[in-house]
Image 1 (cartoon, helix red, strand yellow):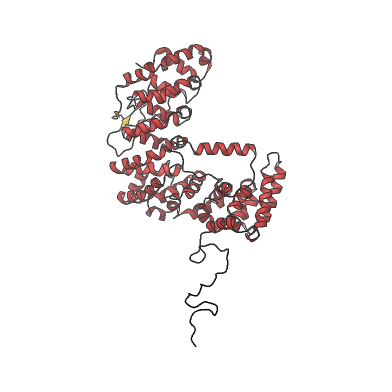
Image 2: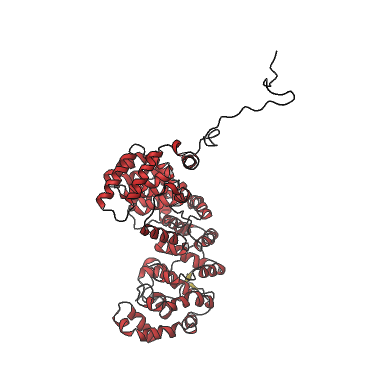
Length: 518
């Protein structure tokens, strides 16, 4: 008799129940597709019971050792002994350890403090997988420490492995930090090879091009020298820069250099479009991911931090929440991008920039490149009331500190004697006169500089002034009507002895006495 599809115990008229599935602790994605290592590791950390986690005892042991290493009152010999023991326990399992979010932080600590001889087997084991680890937020920081501690030969191997992958890594938040770390540590030929890969696919095939001895990389010179098509180079760089701008990954020096070189060959419409896309990212916080995210997700295996480490972590989070415009002022490439946005942005963009800087003017004024940005902001004025409220009032509050500082005095001297070669070097004057070539209407600051016109650096003399009044009247409004000059005179009288003996303060005293440039 044929089977009716029902079990003997199934009542008539009722469908047979589906067979019960055996209870399994496998991840839900195992049946359909193979997951990435990070998802598998994270699932194991959260859902698997402790007894079934792979290498759980090993992770627990090295975590205990890591807690001892992080003690503040530990001598160098004791720390070295504990690190050697931890690396011995992880020997042969470096890749598996790197796949665990918690264990990867322990391995990162060992790489940070271990000797070069102990570092070598770690690099050999992870070198074929460094590109994959660079895209993982749990292991990207580990790769950065491996790069930092690598020997010259090991670092050269890593740079060679980056060829063909630089663009894809720049489009990844963590991968971009790894590329930027390698870029900072690279030699001049290695930097040139990384940048050329972002300029054109044709340049990747030219090995002798990266070995050329040039004072700086210039896309225009390379295009003319090697007969490349400007349109193809522009198209290739557009495909790289556009995703970077869309994702907001604009805090790295290599990105600044690529965008600066792009602006030198782009047409007016493309250049202004990039600048206007860049401005919203500059006036918000950084997109860098914090290193302790996984520690917050899985706190039971995260080593405890000392008071000093908590203080450093708090300062690091404060830096990451700062305006990106302030953070990029650490390099000349960042300064160029900031000046390009300030000079060639729309009036509403300049107002957004100045409003976002409220409360940060002092920090910018004390910075080597930031003070030049403040000088530019004082000279290109759309609204003197807004400049007085945001910039001049904050300069007045910190006047005594600024007049004795090498960089802090420069915005004040700019109001008295614009672009004076006694207070600004030729290179700094060149930065202040920097303009994007493609927009026709260039912008200069308060007229021509005296004695030095930067002709040797490519400075231009036929530039225009963008302001709401003539330079002399504008300086009078910012100095006199804002009461900055009155407070400055009182400060100079109170500290006249110190100013005369100070290397930098005497310049401010001199300009106050003579009344500046007429």
